Amino acid sequence: QVQLVQSGAEVKTPGASVKVSCEASGYTFTTYGISWVRQAPGQGLEWMGWISAYNGNTNYAQKLQGRVTMTTDTSTSTAYMELRSLRSDDTAVYYCARVLNPATSSFGVPTRAYWLDPWGQGTLVTVSS
Amino acid sequence: EIVMTQSPATLSVSPGERATLSCRASQSVSSNLAWYQQKPGQAPRLLIYGASTRATGIPARFSGSGSGTEFTLTISSLQSEDYAVYYCQQYIKWPGTFGQGTKVEIK
Image (cartoon, rainbow over all chains, first blue to last red; front, side, top):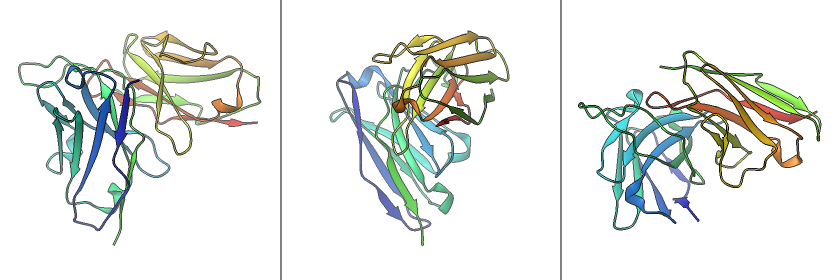
């Protein structure tokens, strides 16, 4: 079955970086993309960004631009999300989710989105001094 | 950005009763709407996409309806495992935006 398995919980100090992995199985990795969504304690879902596993194209949430990098390793069917300069308000559960790759405009911006299915089990990242 | 508004924030329903959850979009999303279920300590799970198509393995007691700006998720007869938070998501416009969620609790 299609499955995404994420790396384990992390505790980081403010200013540090974290890299979360998401290993896919049960489908051809390069025919989909991976979106990352985070959820602060007791809060709703916040979309962070997307990467195409086909060609590595990315698109990030504006508020995270400059601090987040999403990559893939097609040899291991694994996606990665790195977040730098961590702050206390980055404390959240981070999820990866499979998504269809959208068509993009001539500027490389996706023209639409798709539903997310399935989701990884989540990775708790705690930022605390 | 398309803003998704869910109501009510909390819905108290007795086991076996019907639950009706609403989701409103700030502009038309046609049928490009998904519903997710999230239980405590778990990841969200896709229930419905295309406003009314059940995802694989989702029981028939879950149904979605609506188009344009008004959408409904109906759980026909609540089971114990259905008590959870439900999110809607529009995906007609990048990057796709979520509602704030409706918590379905035991009455």
